[in-house]
Length: 239
Image 1: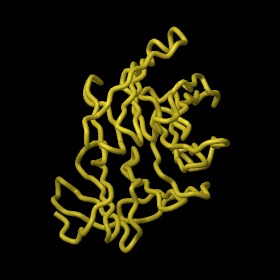
Image 2: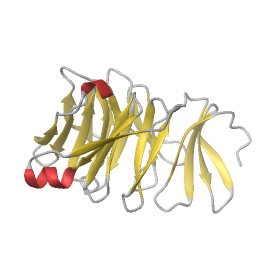
Image 3: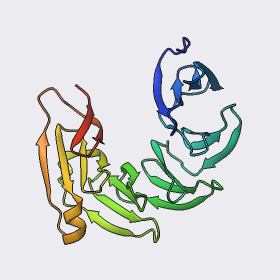
Image 4: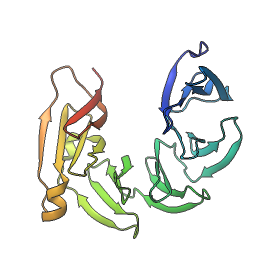
């Protein structure tokens, strides 16, 4: 294992599972599992929590307001600049060949082919808390600071659906979608977790949802994630 790691900030596997990338306090390195070796592609760089492998096994990462794509030997293939505030997350949509980058005030959609910005979505009266593509790649879902959830059609770039009946006091900051698009789970700065029935909402136009509370000792929820067949949810929380 890399003995130079003093603190790891993030790590991601590639699609084949034969290598993974780590951002640590020394730089950004790739670990080759089959060869039992590692190599830094960036040394003495600032740590980042946003990194991923592309479909062609290049490395996509963000540092402050810029995203960049690197080969495994460290060569910079492209840079994408379009944010004034720090990028908090990004995601690759292989079905539409998009890259999504999110800051609190802005979401940019980039072409994964030529790395040009294709569309921008602005958070006019609120802030973006979370965003991700639907499992089928057809929509982008955004969560705002006022707890509203928008579903953006990636063909028309119009909002197909909006959930705005959520209690603002719950202060949601993260969500996830089940692989079959039946449910959306969300949580945030309280110990409450919300589950929405998307299947009924899309077919009937009325939102059905319920709330459960985490056991005593749990505080701010940092991340929620559906597991397996979407009947289990993993929750990362403080406390």
